[in-house]
Length: 131
Image (cartoon, rainbow, N blue to C red; front, side, top):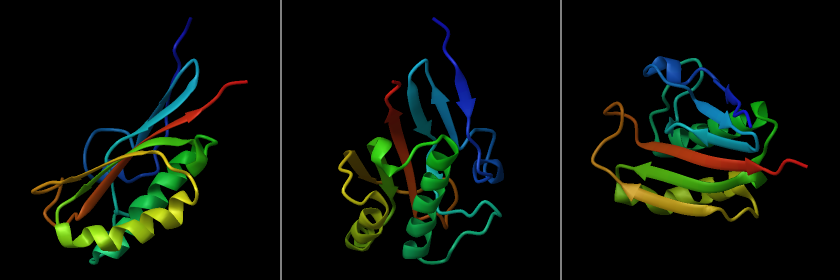
């Protein structure tokens, strides 16, 4: 059995380092994203937590779209925030993008992320069943 890996880059990771925004691995359809900040593909980072969280989820959905997946395929979400006070503001943003999907969650408070002004990173695992 051959394993196929497909890279799905939207241009965010290239502003930070030498890694992919996401990699899909198979023979089944599993997608693993890198930690995705609220950085736009053009390299802009919103100033507010809400702006960064919203953009991070837009990035995740764009990666899923390029893999012919949607939020319904997300089975696990790991979220990294640097400020406890952002947790209540984060839930409605996350819910806006996940809808009724209820994947496994992990939320960690960390002392810092890739750059000092990055307030959130999100990574997801998505699975699409092969007929």
